[in-house]
Amino acid sequence: MTAPQLVLDDVTVRHGGRDVVRAVSCAVAAGERLALVGPSGTGKTSLLRAIAGLDAVAAGTIRIGARDATRLPPEQRGAVYLHQEPVLLGLRMPSPTDCSIASAPRHSPAAIPGR
Image (cartoon, rainbow, N blue to C red):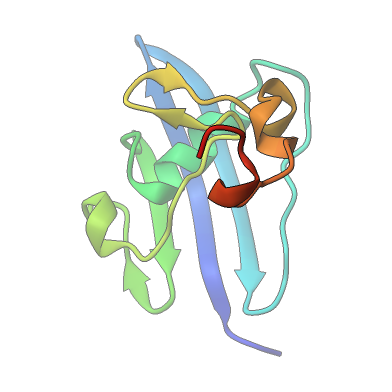
C-alpha cells in the first residue's frame, strides 16, 4: 500500500463559535482522488480551506506528505484551494460564455478596414 499523502485526523473547523466541520478523518494516497459531495452549508469548502491553510483548524491534525501541516502557513503546505468561481481581487471574472469577444474570429490588421 502507498503511504498516504494527505491525512486528516479528527479535524474540526469552527466559524463564529460553531463547528462547521466536526471530527473528519480520512487518508488519501498518492494518485488517489477524493471527492467531497454534499448539500450547501455542510462544510466542504471549510474543510478544503483548512487543508490549504486558509481556515484555522480548531482540533485535530492535517498531515501533508510526512509533515504535520496543521499550523503551517498556506505558502509552506504545498496545497492550494481554487474556488470554483474564478475571482480576482474580489471581482468575479467572466467565464468564456459571458464574453462574446472570446469566441470572435481573429483578423490580421491587414484584414481590418481602414488599416
